[in-house]
Image 1 (cartoon, rainbow, N blue to C red):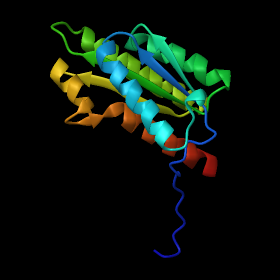
Image 2 (cartoon, rainbow, N blue to C red; image 1 turned 90 degrees about the vertical axis):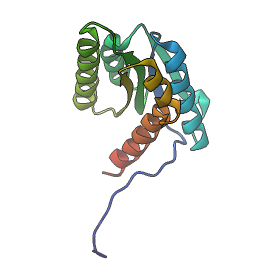
Image 3 (tube, rainbow, N blue to C red; image 1 turned 180 degrees about the horizontal axis):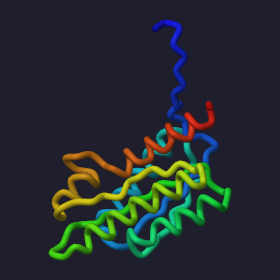
Amino acid sequence: MSNLRTIEGQMNAQGLKFAIVATRFNDFIVDRLVGGAVDYLSRHGGSVDDITVIRVPGAFEMPVVCQKVAKSGKYDAIIALGAVIRGATPHFEYVSGEATKGIAHVTLDTGVPIGFGLLTTDNIEQAVERAGSKAGNKGVEAAAAVLETVRVLQSL
């Protein structure tokens, strides 16, 4: 194994430009995710001047905005942040499923990495847990994943 060549992303955000596409719906949760992502990038050498937050109404609107951002060529990566909380109707499945598929298509079609931080939870307590309490902050995790992915892509 000593001769094994390994390519890994360095966790250094210096010089990179990020767009955070964040939903307004459930903003009391999403704002915590955005704060976590910005804090993570800042602590890893990024500049807040190189981070643009773009607000969209809800999760269903995220893919088309991510697509426009990706095609603009202005950003090295996108972080998609939102929260879909299950209700009493099948709306949850439609919105979360289509948003997830759409975001995946954008990153594959454009080659621009997208950190996926769309919470899909059964209740508000689970969302709060994933926005900075018991289960950590998924905004931080999305920022970390996309930073590493950008650096891996640059190494290939």
